[in-house]
Image (cartoon, rainbow, N blue to C red; front, top):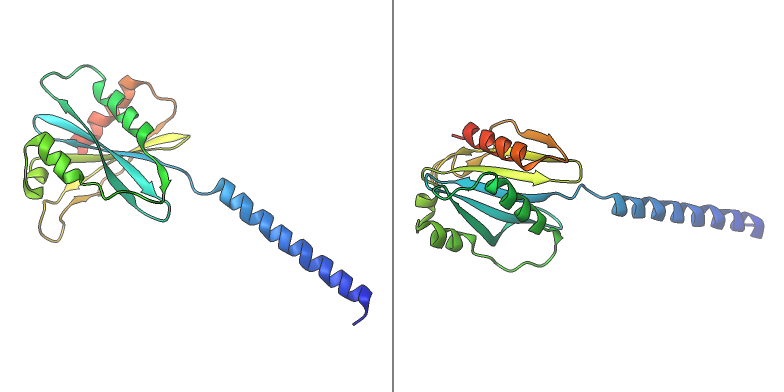
Length: 181
């Protein structure tokens, strides 16, 4: 092979390499949408708001950052304000996390010692937020045993465009909780 031909082949390979590298860097910069997440669990006497951090390569992890809101001393729009604070504390792309024990914290806050008691008479919604909108997903309580155990996302999600004021956010949270069984 002639040196001119080798030079042309080398230039083509060199350009292809950097073109591919440039595409990979754009993908890493653009990446996946970063969601901030929190769960709200309603009991007959209180609300619990839990912060969820998302792992870099997969699912969300419940943290021990949990707030309890009593229904007796409830202040107008307090739930929306606390949910927003928990969404701000949520992290995306967590690599290392400690093994939190959120069920122990929930049992201390509610006085319900077992998972069966914690799921009894409870409703849960999952709230996710990115740069453009908020998604509120109601769930169906399947109990702690059986084939449908846990909270199942059987209902259609509620989408809110950002920015949203606290009063409308609170109203949609309550509407989602009413949709839960």
